[in-house]
Image (cartoon, rainbow, N blue to C red; front, side):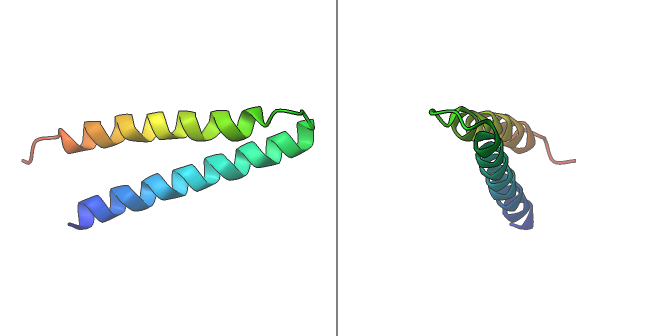
Length: 61
């Protein structure tokens, strides 16, 4: 159970950092479309889902 709680916490932190970084970069660039605010969480989500599948498929020793 602790393994899944750790993965969920890591997932949420990664998404929050991605949203914050995307918002910060979009504020600095002042573009009309918030490209980084959309792009960073999507990349973060795909990487974290890949990591989650990789972790869940590990065999117990």
